[in-house]
Image 1 (spheres, rainbow, N blue to C red):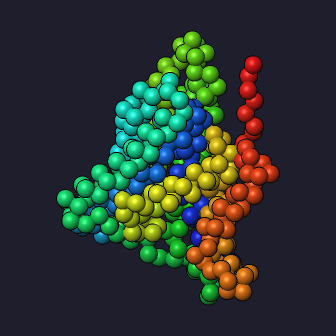
Image 2: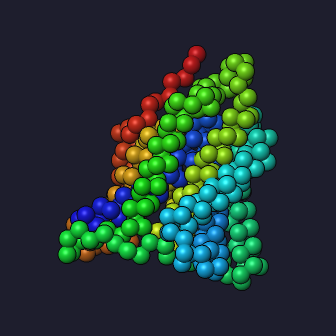
Image 3: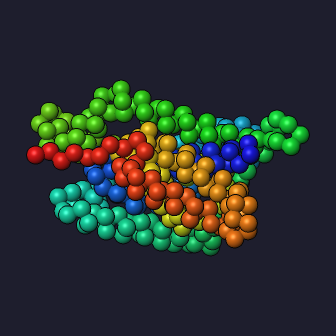
Length: 312
């Protein structure tokens, strides 16, 4: 049971970080940025390439694993954040006044473009687009003779918690965070109060995409194998986590991601026993999404979300 709990928390915190990118953009623009899953994928490739470079140059043998991971995360965050700002400027800003379906289609187009772009670049560079990240943390913490905790899982959880705390403090207490909340409530009024709306929106994409890049690096460090389509299913689940917790609500995205990871982990472990072998671990996604449907039926705004009230 403790091992299942740890696996669920590790996966859940990865979901939560990616879900924060969805919920931040939706909270400000009311836009579902489906390209965010591919920004996560780009971050995973960037972080993995940094780790592979350090490994090839022999630095991984001398650098502490935490330092190597931080370097990879920083570069992945910079690249992914820059990519997020570029996507907002090219694909979303010109469509800001269009019907909501139009930027949604644009987001899906950007998603497919990034998948094929990474596949093309990696294919031309390495003649392969499946990468395996070097293992950074091989040791385990032994608690009992039958229970040991992998250090890499604890590192993922601690890194995720740290980023979430800093993001919450930034949004709730900083000047830019207040500007984000003002733009989320009313863009026109915020612009009349001397808030640069375009700059605030760009900053939102920068932070959300940067978190996606960091999550991609943590995912690569935890699960090793990545490919250009790794963000597709994980992005859907992270979006599900954001909806489960309450889309547009930052604590809700954290809660939704953790709950979804735990549901998957416990579902994979106990579905076979509970159904006498009729359903195995491969049905864990069905189990998690069934729980989501049940929650949305009884509380459509999500666990921590509040129903939107239309102003007259």
